[in-house]
Length: 162
Length: 126
Image (cartoon, rainbow over all chains, first blue to last red; front, side, top):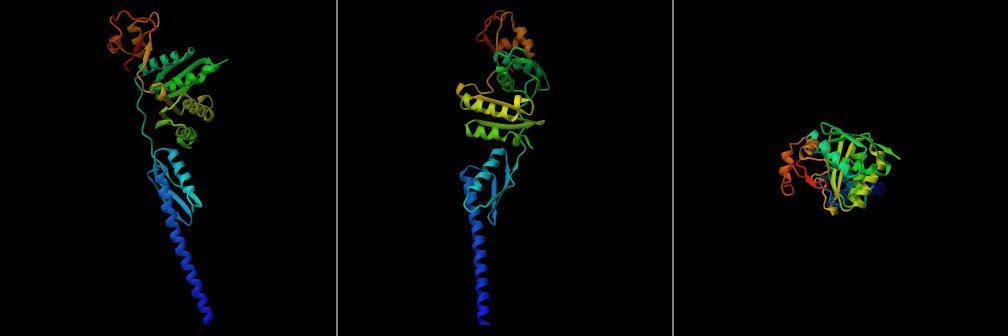
């Protein structure tokens, strides 16, 4: 009887010590994750750890920050897996493009400067439609010229000629 | 899949090669505007764009990356190079601007509005 009781006490004691150790461990890991995020320059993200699983939450503007937070957390000792519940903030709207005639002139001239004769431009409400064809070797450069003209959006129908 | 997810490898690459950028979005089009430290870095980003969206046909990204080293930020003032046969009013028509607006923006290089020369770089006030 006595022996049974002491065994029971021992088991109970062991369990409580185990539980305490676990709890403490999670808090420690949580702190380590949070510290690692700060060290890696990730702000706006909160970590919580339960049974070695780190859950990341918060709102960030850029998906690379969300990814970085996950990588940072995975690298922390004691983290077995990461649940990435970080959400992305809606992005601001871009600066509106200049008026359509001005944008037409700008894109046309930028294409000309890039040597993209053969490309034609039309603009409606900031959306630039580009048609015609340019030599294959020039294609990327011509698309760059359009992208760098302060456009609202692009309808790319430009063809490559050999 | 959000546009940021679609283009995340491009953004990761920009972070790695030292390109700084701003993100904005409207009507299903993601805008990435930034500056690369070198033309090689810019080229890497464009190569990645071409890999994700071959020949750039999706029309869901405006990628405006300048090269800081060249001192030409993407929002640099627009200029027009005068061609033979051009007049200020003709150039104005290309931009929907009165000739006087172009003359005023270039008084430092144009003395007589009736006299411009092929090859002159005119600032266009847009």
